[in-house]
Image 1 (spheres, rainbow, N blue to C red):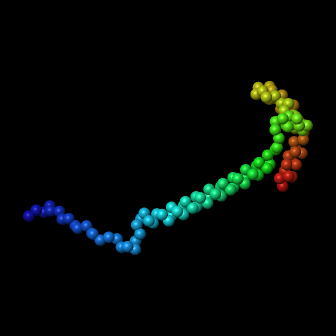
Image 2 (tube, rainbow, N blue to C red; image 1 turned 120 degrees about the horizontal axis):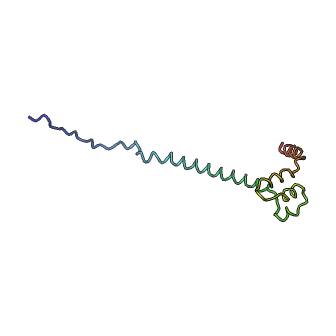
Image 3 (cartoon, one colour; image 1 turned 180 degrees about the vertical axis):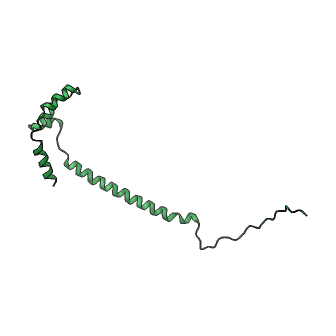
Length: 115
């Protein structure tokens, strides 16, 4: 008698009950919810960015370079009279020539306007 005989167990031939859905059908629901949430977030981001761009464009100063050069504003004329050189001596001369006496009043006016 041979003791190394292997016995094969028969495989079940029954099919799963009809009430249990397959795994692939179960994955469609969560994927659809994720797609909808991502779509809503993308639409919100687009709306938010458009609102901010409209505010920025409304606050942007209007004018061309020619209008700025023709301006009588002393701050604009002071900025235009500065040197375009990047040498240390030129930068130091521009800083020394800049009038900072009214900067506190300007900062106070900006803070008052923000509040």
